[in-house]
Length: 109
Length: 109
DNA sequence: TAATTCAATCGTAATATTGCAATAAACCAA
DNA sequence: TTGGTTTATTGCAATATTACGATTGAATTA
Image 1 (cartoon, protein in one colour):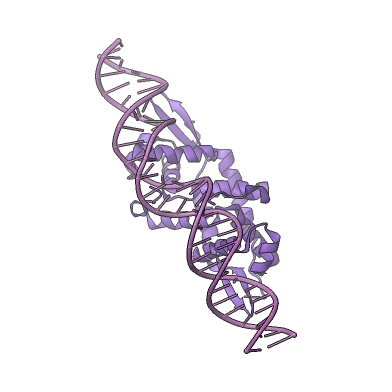
Image 2: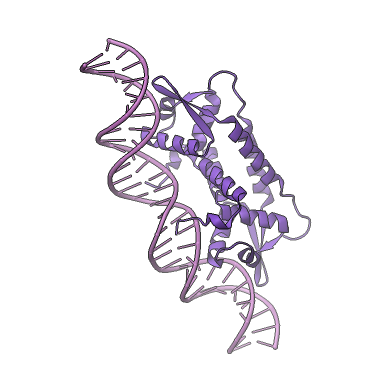
């Protein structure tokens, strides 16, 4: 039904899924890479770099912001988007734990 | 338009986004956790564990399989789903590199 | 004040995703 | 072969996502 049954999953599972979904788009990957490489970024630059319309970039930035992954501070006319360090580290650790929980089994398959 | 402009992004960005999207659902996170903890799993068990219909579980398994994250080997009547170790490690490394590329800046924000 | 600039929001269209009932397909056992 | 068990597929309905043009809002500059 296009509606996810969040109630039957743990908070941890839902939170991880939401954050991963925020990352799961090439435009948003590219935006984050730009922000990281520039070490501070404004929206206008992104519109020039990526080949997407200003409205589309703004929408992607909003999603990243809603997921808590980036923060935007108004800097006069422009907006300075940066990584939100705490959330970044938390997600990094969560993912490391998730991926690290798997170890190649010797039996089966 | 609900259609992603894959052409304007790099292969690396598109690949990472596709794999993250495969993980970006609580049911699929839960499925992977089950497979990992059981160290070998069959679909029927998942239907019992998670509160989703058999058709829905099968669909999620298909997506994980399409993304190359898991593999299913037919074992008589049942199917044994396992983590695909190579893809798992690759994604783990890619994500570690992506998250590791960010370092807290001293200026700005 | 008026013009300009940058980003957010609105409205809309096209497409994708999620979920399930019903059904099909594959396999084993008797 | 017939029946039981397990997973895949099909066909929907409801909702979400992606993208962009047009517009609005806020702040700067002339």
